[in-house]
Image 1 (tube, rainbow, N blue to C red):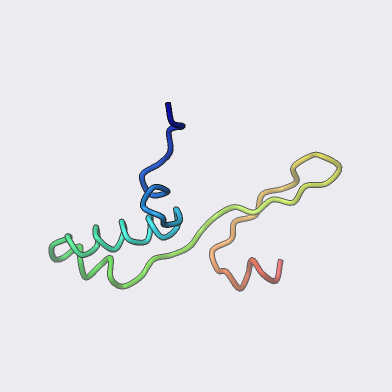
Image 2 (image 1 turned 120 degrees about the vertical axis):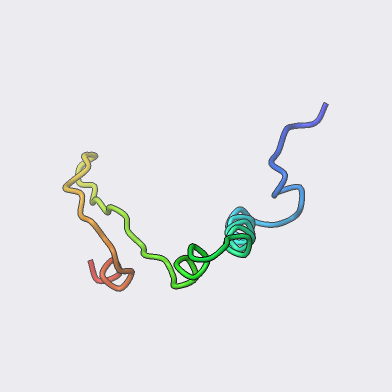
Length: 71
């Protein structure tokens, strides 16, 4: 009996490559006006928290990668 694994691993690609291909296929299948709206780009947003002495500190919203690199 073999160990179960994900199909993207069986295909020999990384998870990020799989996600990139899947989103590209999804964007290509959209009809107007959504297709033009999605092709304009995407926005990045996530929360960043610092850990001190084993406790999570205050969460800060990050919406630009350059801002995250400087923080």
